[in-house]
Amino acid sequence: MKKHFYLVINENAGGGTGRKAAAKIIKQLQTANIDYTTFYTDHAGHEIEIVQRLAQDTLIPWSTDLETDSFPLLVVLGGDGTLHSVLNALESFDSKIPIGYIPCGSGNDFARGVGIARQTEKAFFQLLKAETPQEIQIITYAESIREEAGLAVNNIGIGLDAAIVNAANTSASKSTLNKFNMGSLSYIFSILKVLFTQKGFPILVEINGKNIEFDRAFLCTVTKHPYFGGGVPIAPMADPRKPVLDFVLVERVNMFKIFWLILLLIQKKHTHSKYFHHFQSSKFRIVSTVPQYVHADGEILGKRSTDISFSTETRLFWF
Image (cartoon, rainbow, N blue to C red; front, side, top):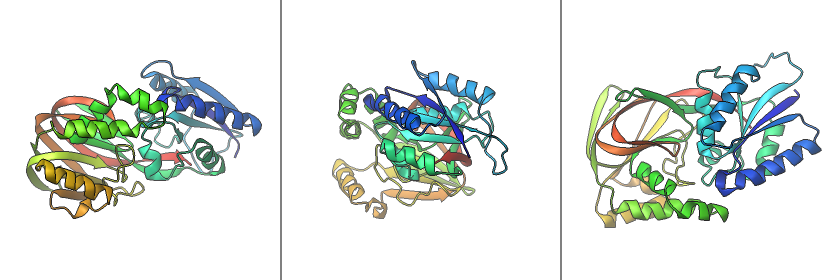
């Protein structure tokens, strides 16, 4: 089926990687004589406005028995944060509107987790060769204290990982490192900074009708694929194609044991530690009464007490 590509481009993603990727993709589209329309974001949240307008006027749900001469395919060029915004912008529209994605960020965990190539040309050829979209499970969340809800493609974290994301996002070194395609190093610097300041906190986890309490939670992450923080395999067993959530909790221990856990993490042996807890379920509820940083796909939701329920939904991605 012939396609018309509607490119939503964040040129600043990955410290300018988005701009370079867009130039390559447009050249390939012109060479292949493929119809396309470009939309460039020029301020925070602009991608939301663009996508909602396209969803109202242009985009249509995917179906195997479609009768159309040219299918309008939304293609996002940006980082995980841009993809997060686009997905949430489409939340109130038909869930069968597919999304194509060319990863251009500093972490690109979603691409790594689901099997999208992280090299621009390879990701583009995946788009071209695909004849139908793939079903990927994403996270849905509802926070009852502030009555907020949304979607996430990677993970939602409370505590250490959210504090690391906050420190990395506000780090003066991130933009500099991005220019040299070393953005993930900002996470390492932030880890070292936050490790010495993040305290343990009480948390309640509701799973399968049971309540489990932890007195000194340190890192709490609900995820749909193995990676976070730019390729760290925090949950190697997670599968983005199954309607199951993976919840990882690491307890606060002394600094020596923390560095030992990091060493185990690098060796992918951290799941054997008694301080590492892993749960799988189609639904979770997490309650944290002590204010902690919370993030969804690297977007900081604030530092607050939380009562969040999690589940999964199917979305279509073209690759």
